[in-house]
Each structure stands twice: as structure tokens, then as C-alpha cells.
Image 1 (cartoon, rainbow, N blue to C red):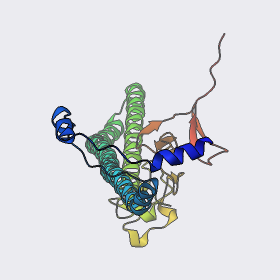
Image 2: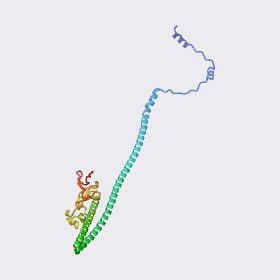
Image 3: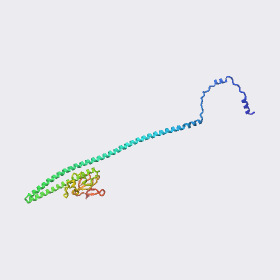
Image 4: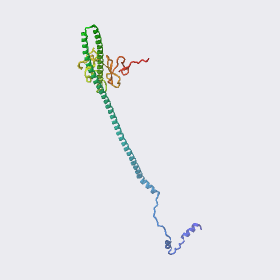
Length: 310
């Protein structure tokens, strides 16, 4: 007999009956832990769960990420808008400050020009007073000359006549010098009025001087100031309707110019060699100083005589 046959016979053998009460005794003696029912999880169920919830979870994650990104971008855009508004306000304030500064500079220049015109006007009034006084003195001198001539004709003695002639000659020289001085001062007064009228005309015409004397007829009080008192060959016009260049003694040398070159000659008297500069000042050049035209800007300037050193 082999082992398989023996095993088969043993299985077919009748079982011995268990002792009575053995099962109850075993139940009493053995205390088993409480049974916990568990259900095994199969890998297929895990994969099914993942496959079922992954699209929803992934969409939720992507959606939340988009919301966070949108919130961050919105916050940055809001900050940029605020900065842009601040910059625009600053730029507007800066532009307003620039306009205010330009207006302030313009008003300051106008105020300075007005102050200069006031000073020139005050000086002009002083010159007018001096001219009036000199004219009165010249009239008195003319009366004295006439009286001296009458006295000279009334003197009978030859020696006394010669002495009186010398006295009267000296008086005549003094009178001529006084007359020449008065005419020079009157010429300076005329040039002052011409310079003042030219700058008043320029203030109303973009700071550009007039092209000639006739253009500023409204600013000049009368055409008579355009004739130098020492110019005996010219007669002053009675009004502007009868005015022509034959009634002008002065040269207008800076037509359509500006006061940006204050040393440029505006007008000149060829008799006394007095010049009015573009800033309104008047200088008496005399015999040693002269003016010359600049080759670059075609304007006339004062040239001082060269100095000699020994």
C-alpha cells in the first residue's frame, strides 16, 4: 500500500464522538476578542475612486489656482492704476507749476520792464524840466545880448568901445556855449523819448521794435522831437499828416530788432553824436567815440577808441 491509499482509508474511517459538554467547556474557557467586520479593499476599487474623482479634483484645483492668480493680478492692476493716477496727478501738478512759473516769469519781466519805463519816464520828466529851464535861460540870454548890443552902440569913446566889444564878445561866446549845451540836452531828451516810445511799441508787438519812426506815431507825443534843435537845415512837421523823412534828424538803426542786445544802437543823432541804445539809455559819444556795424547781426554798436600806452 502506498501513502495515498493509506490516506484515503484514514479519511473513510469513522470519527470518534466528542465528549459531552466539550464544546460548552471550550467556549467558557476561551475568551475570543470581539469580531470586527472588515471589508477588504481591492486595488480595482481604489483605481475606480481615483478615476471618478480626479477630474473634479483637478478642475477644482485649477479653478482655485485661476482664482488666486486673478486675485493677485487684480491686486497688482489696482496698485498700478493707483500709481498711474498718482503719477498723472503729479504730472498735472508739475505742469501746473511750470505754467505758474512761466506766468510768474512773464509777470516778473513785465514788472521789471514797467519799473524801467517808470524810471525812464521820471528821467524824461527831469530832462523836460531842464530843457524848459534852459530855454528860459536862453531867452534871458537873448535879451541880455540885445541889451549888450544896444549898450555897445551907445558907447562913444574908442578905447571904452574896444573894451566893451571884448566884453560883449566874451558874453556872446558864453551865450553860444550855453545855447549849444541847451541844444545838446534837448537832443538827449528827444532820444530818450524815442527810446521810450520804441519800447512801449515793442511791448504791444511781441517785444519787437518798430520798423521806423512813422510806425510808432501813436507812442511819440509829437513829430517835433524827431528834429534835433541844432539841425537848422530841417523844419519839424506840425503833425503826422504832414510828416516825411525830410522832417527827421535822427537815424533809426535797429528796425524790427529786440532788446536782447541792450548795447545795440537804436537811434543816433549825427550832429551831436548822441546815441540811444536798445535798453533805453542815452550816451553822448563826443568826437572820440563812434559806432560801427557788426558783421554777424548787422546791428550797430559803440566802438571805444584804442588806448595808447607809453
